[in-house]
Image (cartoon, rainbow, N blue to C red; front, side):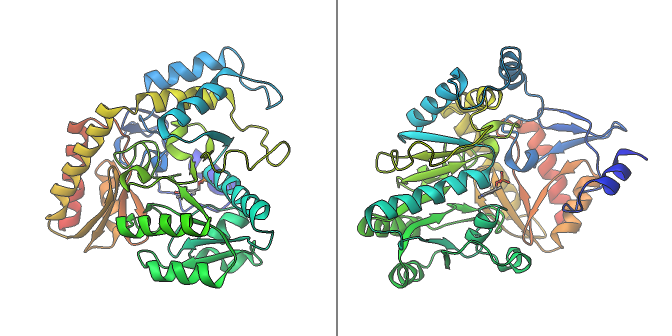
Length: 387
Ligand SMILES: *Cc1c(COP(=O)(O)O)cnc(C)c1O
């Protein structure tokens, strides 16, 4: 059996994979074993922030691999400590808990929210308001947080204590807060899986006001939007707000699993000894890779992200067969006249890998994709949309 047949036989049927095997890559180029070259506009769902086998990232990771690959959290290690300091200095947050994925980062945020309210108001203040059409992960608790019924149906009962308000409708958030004993409001500033939809600035600022007034935690899920993706280090920075808790993962590790829950001055001491933990969390190899990622997301790189974003929006917004372009930075959703899956399949045949989100073509290219490579790929998408 070849690898595709082996996978179909032995790997659980949870993924509708594209009919492509990737054997290696370099930057924004990916290769299948038969030598076919692809321009990668998905970066492993926004994970490989600097592309495949990026030299500086490989160097940082392999240097740590040669020292020690894991110690458990019973001991101190430099990469974990330095990464936490770097993240706090870049965001103004005060403390960081490391996990291994986005869902786990959100689990931590949920625990922080419940304990914060339990300490201050009482254990019955345990409800978290999230938004319809959101996505917060695949564990039973983060699925409950996710405001999309299609993810819930088969897995009842989910963790209780989540209510879903309507995005960009501040009255619906106010009602949810009035009708429930709420400990937190959790949002993605740009809904990713929900169709690459940026929330309105007024709405996000309105949520922050409610949170401050009611002493409710404002939690921002930056698992997809974080780490330079939207043209700022974290997406909330586009909105002029300061969250109480920020979660991130995906691009942070640059390709190795790491998740992170950042807490501000109000929430930094909510979790105490034994309240939370993770065997792998803050693993030195993953942390070393993450430091190299964060250190390279500077003003110059963010300007390049914004310039590439502008190019994509300008080129595709008026293109034939394109209904609309949404998103922020290098997180882009394209509503097409043709079915998105047909556009994606044709792009793949022509050597461009795209993602989907709901009924849209979704692009999450590496932050450092060369402009020439991006232009080539966008032309291929444009041609596919026009058919
Ligand atoms: C991908 C994603 C998650 C889940 O992350 P995993 O690493 O797959 O657990 C959570 N929230 C958002 C916004 C995401 O995009």
